[in-house]
Length: 294
Image 1: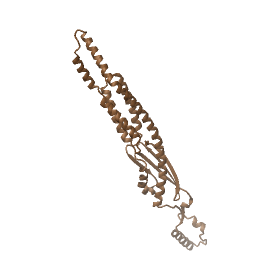
Image 2: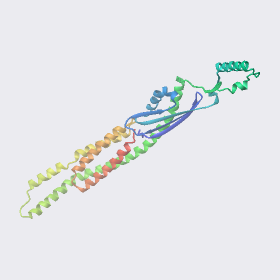
Image 3: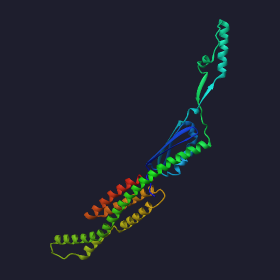
Image 4: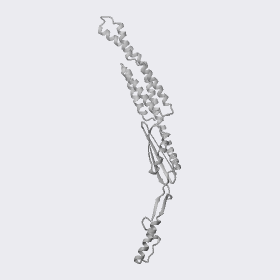
């Protein structure tokens, strides 16, 4: 199945007092590369998250964004610094005895003292269960990413198959044209020799046959057409594969382009040359599409 290398997926779930959001996006890349951005306290889970992504994505650059929000106030705790409270009370007694104050410190007075009562975020320590929840959430996001990559891959495959059909059609035309090119060259060569000799002497048939044989050998493209046909069959086979075939298709397009260039260099006729130009244009469009395939 053909998959694109570009896509997007997201998921969210609640666990351990957090609301976790995960966004995953992928773009074209020569190899596999995963980048993860998440809260610092969860950095210990980075390797596990990368493995989760690489189970589904074999090629492309994947960026994973993990954000977490506290779900309730219960995640906050209020603490009292009793040592500091004792120090404040002791200081107040010393002041009262030294200066003769009659007032006693009350609860309201204590609550106004700085740093005596503090509110802190309660931290969830990284553990195996938290890792499993994160990976499960990421799997859901990656599943969405994979669905998008498959949908786009289907359009890429359809486009490539259509262009491959155009190439096969032109290939048949070139096979039919090849013999006519030699016959046409022979007729033109004979006509030119007769014109130069102005019918003063007969044409040397043996020399003429030799020249035609040399030309026929020089412009023979049977081998290139045969290899090109084989490449077409290999391309159709790769498009039916279930594994990632982007690199193989890229190499195969290079081989096709090489054969077409050779046919073009051997062509000494306007009709094959025009068809070679069309084939090169189609191959370039195929190459651009294949750059997006996993």
